[in-house]
Image (cartoon, rainbow, N blue to C red; front, top):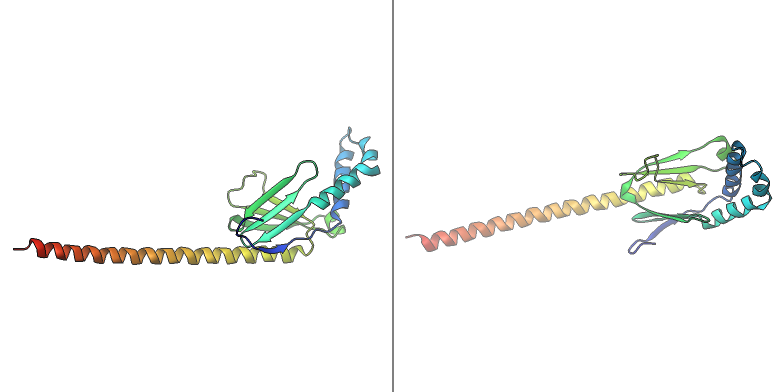
Length: 181
């Protein structure tokens, strides 16, 4: 967790992700001619091991300022997305995901670094619609606080300008009294 942030919600992932990964990789091995002989190795143990490790390494936390996500088996990925940069949260479903009772939550941000679309895809969050609502609510709270803070700064700046103008007028009056005949 980042410094100064408080944990709002920790996402839990559906164990069906393991089956989803096993089947998706098997599908891609099947459509590639080279991958067909590897299907035996994949289904006899390697696929179960990798999908289990992937599931164990999935972590997602919503803090009051960021969305933190970690995943990976061999190559680990850790992303931190500031809530004020989130532009869109979208659910994706397909027949396989629906059968396994999974959903993909696609997160798009302002100034995306990924030209293909989303910055992050979260697969299989339990109660994903509640998680989405919490992210949107926390984002709205953060944006509201930032707006109030910027209004307060503008008000303070206006007060400072008014005081400086009064000081300028007083100094001009003193100057006129000193140099008047």
